[in-house]
Amino acid sequence: MIKNITTPFIWAGALSVLLTTGIRALTIDFEDLPYYSSDYENGSNLGSDYFDDYWEYNLSHFDSRGAIFQNIRFADDDPYFQGMWHGWAYSKDSNTVNPGYDNSYSSATGTGAAGSASYALLYHADFMGPSFTELTSFVQLPTGLDRPLSLDICNTAWTVAYMEEKFPGNTFSMTLTIKALDAGMGVISSRDIILGDGMSILKDWTTIDLSGFGSGVNFLDFTLSSTDAKGLFMNPPAYVAVDNIVVIPEVSSYLLPFGVAALGMIVLRRRK
Image 1 (tube, rainbow, N blue to C red):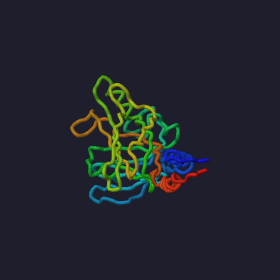
Image 2 (image 1 turned 120 degrees about the vertical axis):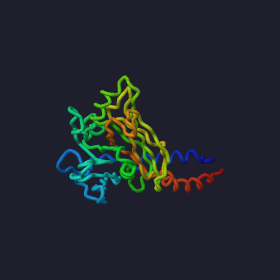
Image 3 (image 1 turned 45 degrees about the vertical axis):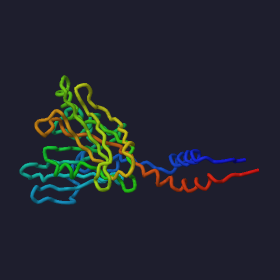
Image 4 (image 1 turned 180 degrees about the vertical axis):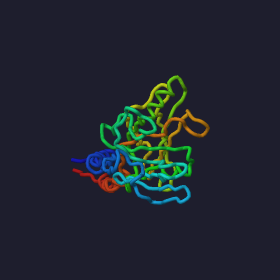
C-alpha cells in the first residue's frame, strides 16, 4: 500500500535517470580537425570570413564538435606583422626539446590532455590592442549546449621555458582568466587560473572546473595577463594550450516533463 509519494523522491529518481541516460555531455577535443602541410594550423589554411584591406589580415575560424574558434592571420607580406596570427590555432606538435619563438606550437607535455594528439592554442597578443584581441579571444559553444562543466589547460613549452628562467625568486605570475558570456556578450561569471609564479609552474595538463558558471553560457572568453610586464604589455610568451571542453544542455529543460508528472503523482494515494 502506497500512502504518499514525496517530491524529493521523485526528483531524485528523475535526476538519476537523466544523468545516466538523458543528458549527454559533449567533449570538444579537437581530434576532428584536419592538418595540411604542418603539425599545426594557425590560420594559413582556414580561408577568410573577412579581409581587412588596411591592415591586411584575414578573420577566419575553425569548428570542432560544433564549437567555433576565431583566428586572425596577417598576410605574409604585411609590412608590420608578417604572417603573425592571433586568437585560436590548433596543434599536434610534440617538440618540447628546443622551445622558443620558432617552436611556439607545442604544449609543455608535447601532447594533448591524457596523451591525445590534438589540442587548441590561444595566443593573446595584448600589444595589438583590444580591437584585435576582443575579436578572437572567445569561443562560441555549440548550439543548445549552454552549460560548460570543465576543460583541460597546460602551458606551452616555450612559456614554461621562459617562466623557469625568469620567475623563480621573483614575485612574477601569469594568469588565465576565463569569462562566461551570455548571448549578448554580457559577463555571467569568471574564473582566474594561475599558470605560473615564483613558487610553481603548470607543466602538466590540469582539469579546471567550470560548473560554477551555470547555464545560459553562449561564449567562453579567454584572457592572459602577467605581473611580469613592460608598460601595458606582458613579457612571458602569451600562449596557453586548451583541450577537452566539456559542455551539456541546460538541465532544467530536461527535468520539466518529470516535474509535470511529479505534480500528478504527489496527489495519488491508495486507501484501504
